[in-house]
Length: 154
Image 1 (cartoon, rainbow, N blue to C red):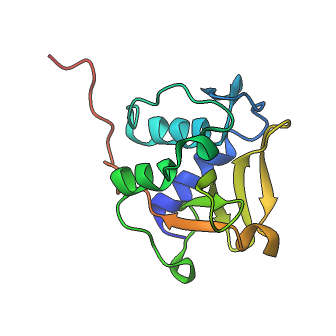
Image 2: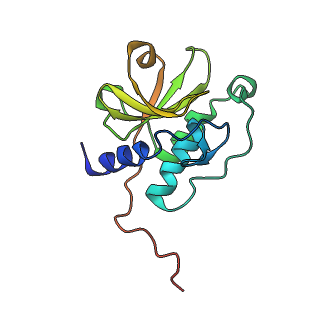
C-alpha cells in the first residue's frame, strides 16, 4: 500500500463507530458518507474541501445531476480504473445504472471499504459483488503536503 493510501485508510478507520447523521461531518459525533469523506479531507489537508450546501436525503433523485461524480472530478481529478484501485481511494456508488451516484466510501483493502452506513455508523464492510457492481467511479486523493501549513504564521 502506498504511503498516502495507508494514511487515508488509517484516517478512515479513526471514524469507525461514528454514528450516522444526515449532513454530519464530525468524527465521533455524526456523519453521513459525504461527511466522512469531508472529514478525511480536512484531516489530510487541514482545510475543508469545498462548501457543501444543505441537501435532502433524496438529493440525487431530485437534481437530475451527478453531483458526487462532478465533485470528485473537481477535487480528485479523473477516475482511476477499478483494476488500478488502491487502498485509500475514494469509491462512489450508484444504486442503479441510470441513477446518479449517491454513496461514497474509502477502499480499505482488496475486499473491504469504510463508509457511513445509514441507520448505523461508520463501518468497515466487505466489498461483496452486490457492492462492486454498484461502483460508479474510483478516485485517488491528491498528493498531500508532507507538512501541514502553519496556520499561525503571520
